[in-house]
Amino acid sequence: MASRDYVNRRLHSFLGLFPIGLFLIVHLTVNYYATQGPNAFNTAANVMEHLPFVRFLEIVLIYLPLLFHAIYGIYIAFQAKYNVNHYGYFRNWMFLLQRFTGLYLVIFLAWHIWETHIAYLLHLKELDFNMMADILDNPGMLIFYIVGVIAAVFHFSNGLWAFLVHWGIIVTPRAQRVTTYFTVVVFILLAYVGVRAVFAFV
Image (tube, rainbow, N blue to C red; front, side, top):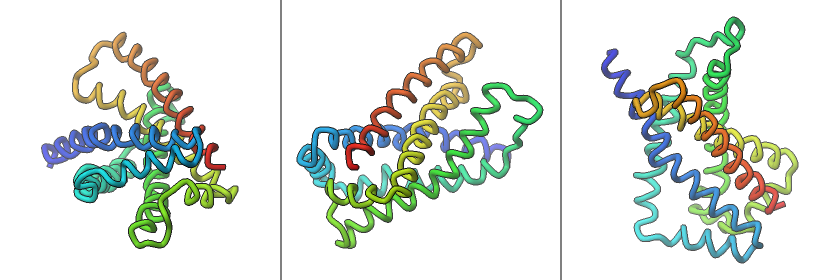
């Protein structure tokens, strides 16, 4: 049982970075084209939607890894023991926020995928600039999406640090400290890209 849990945690960590984390970066980059206007975003989104074998790639490289990562992540979140009340160290807070943002993202991504991609596949909406503009015209949805983007970027950035530690890539306290600074920079840059893209649709 312990061996299976070890493998599942390693797989969960790996999938969070490859391919889910990489897709997050690509997705934020495509969304950032909205800052250049509707035509730029529509062109970028159209290129992504017409990649060869796009549906197969979505299922194998996005949805299946995301499904495993989400389900096992929920298990980890509810199995974890939180001690920030007694030990308010930085890493304890990061551990707590990693779990909380993960749970938020399960709700956010389920809604986002349904509201955009599933609606597009069912021919309920056109996947373009106007779709996102209509969604974000609602102040509640705007806040929901901003928090979702920030949560996703934090979860990825902090998860990157955890991946490097758990896989034995950074071992010494100094290396872990330097990597913390690096992941903070990653978080700030991706959060800027993601949030600015959201406001570009408003």
